[in-house]
Length: 292
Image (cartoon, rainbow, N blue to C red; front, side, top):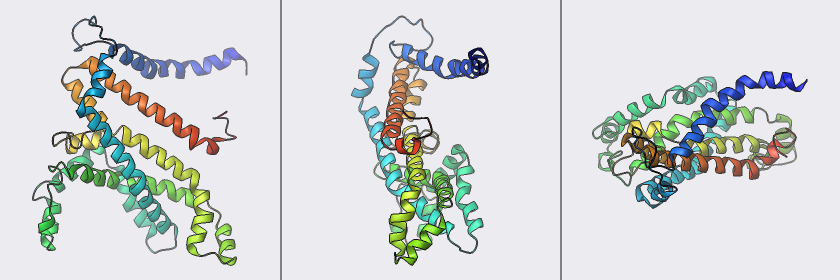
């Protein structure tokens, strides 16, 4: 195909990408170098002071730590749980089609609806407290969303409830691509169920698991909706994330400083994505032309 024709076909997409992606990023980088409230003229140049301020602010560094904790919990707990369910639903059990639908249903709900529903369930004397009291566990009720030591883990439960169905379906699709003949051959050779899973299923499922982990990491880095609706980052910042911190700065009309925080989040997400692609996804992309 001649170059002029290629340019004609690519031009609309490139224009849209430039207007809605590249231009906002460039403007955010520009604003991040100023002390600006969004209304006055852009003339108070502060250089990198906004970035220094972010990393010296304990509230922001705590929010960053919360993101890291959520990433760790997602990789260590959420994805293995989703894999276990996918393995179960990939076997021949009655009602597996109904179970797949039920487990996937929370993912269809919007983040706002999920946050509102769980905020009501986890409030003091809410549905969870009443259920625990009715079965004799009233002494173990907590301030699920008001105790700084508990709220982040309560939020992780809500986030897992919302997203584990997506990872389950993704892993289930990967399991259905594993040839059954390989498992049967391993069984004939005397392999136990665990050995079959460890040496046959898991390696073939590796690309799907790596994609699931990648999506979980990037999602946890940019987590906002559920946290803001459920706790607004409280109490006293115990459940804040980088995104809720960013939004809070915009609400205070600190547009220059908020732009610097947005650049930090963007850069961190980009670096994580590139490193993950370089070291984890590289062999999955070999031969696709997406890596050199």
